[in-house]
Structure formats: structure tokens, C-alpha cells
Length: 301
Ligand SMILES: [Fe+2]
Image (cartoon, rainbow, N blue to C red):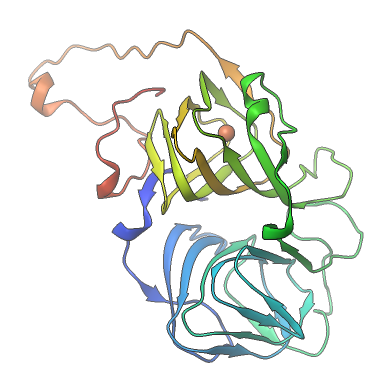
């Protein structure tokens, strides 16, 4: 259970001690989205001092995206723009992080637990929590700064103008039990727009890296974030004229855009003993918003 967050500005949020079990160093995190049932979370993390953790395995599927600074994973140096993913139970080498490094860290299907170990968890479940595959799981490390933007592979006529860098896609064949988890960078070029509403069968979340995108829930600019459960409509997009908009995206399955046009939002009822202008009830299901997001005008509700 993750709440519908749409949208928040990370600068509005408070800091917590980072949930980086078994590591040594001064680290803090902001919780962008948190599942209090299974411990899944999406966090923005800043290393105020050097940090180190011995080799072992995570209790959740883990993804890191380095926004600035440097991370050493075993013998590999990971710089700005590097993405890494380790499924739960997979042995990962020791890690060291330089002071001042900033990252996004995502946990899925588990909590912050980390076991110091020289090998995989004994009952290691391959690939991660979103797949029915029995293939061996593996460490994924991708330097996005060395990748070219590729054309959008997902449906929708104007959506084809979006550009993607695919960081991770569950390679197992898709079926009812395996939806094909996707993590990617997406870029809406300057002036890109799509005035339709879409929804899809999978969750979608994004952290805004640069530029801006105006849409039905407000404006996405650097440091904004949303977590959108499956089937929530969104749209009426207009990307900024100068740089467009770029974000880090995760979806728990392949994206299918179901499209709504000529949408109308109609709310009917008689206000028996209250003033409509000042005492109207809130709508159940209104998304989580932080103070910098302003009011939502119910576009697309
Ligand atoms: Fe979407």
C-alpha cells in the first residue's frame, strides 16, 4: 500500500536518519513515498559524511540513482547519472560513498534490512519481487550519461515524441504473474504536449530532474515527485519551452496508455446546511500534496 502522492516538492519534506542498515556514516533521507505494510519506499538521500557498508544482501529489491558525487561498489566507481539495481537476496560487494554524494534510493517488496554476508541469501529468490521467473537474479549497473535518448516504445500518437533511456526492464517473459518492471529516464522535449488524459494498469512514479511540465495535477519542476497507483488518470501535459522536462521513472509493469478524450468532471449534490464557497467537503481520494504544490483545481478528477 503506497498512497497516491501527486505532487510534492521534496524541499517541503523533513529529514530522517537514513535507513541504510549495517552502514557506517552520517546520512539523511527524505521519504518521498513509504509503504508501511511491506517497507517499500522511495527516498532522496544525502551523505553528509563518508559512508561504508560491508558486502552482503538486501532484504528488498534495491535501486540507486546517483544525482551527484561518487559511489564505489566493489572495484567500480559510479558517478553522476549511474543507476544500480540489486534484487533482494543477491550478494552485493562492499560499498563506499564519498561525502556530499546525493542519490535517489528505491526499495520494493521489502524493508531496509541488510545482512552482512559473503554469499547470496540461502533461499535467494531470483530477479526480485515482481517476477515469476526462476532465472538467476543479477546486479544491474548502467551509466545513463553514456546512453543516447531513444524513441518512446509505448503507445499513444503524441507520446511517440517522448524520449527514453531504459535502465532496467525485467527480462522474463511477461504473463499474468510477471508484468515486466521498468525503470527509465524519460524526457519530454521543449514544447511537447498531449492534451488527453491517460491511465494505465501499472503504478507509475517519477522524480523530476530538470525542466518543467505543466499537467492536470500542477507543475512538475526539479525536485517534485509523484507516486501514482494504477488506473489514476493524468494528462493535459505541456512541457517547458526551453528545456522540456526530464524525470526518473519507475513502473511495476509494461506501460499501456488507455486514453480518455472529451473528459468532463461533474460533481452534483445539494448543500443543505453549509456554504458551497467556504465549507464544501473534500473529495475522498484526493492525492497527497505538499505546500509548494498549491491547490489542485480538480482537473482530471
Ligand atoms: Fe503515465
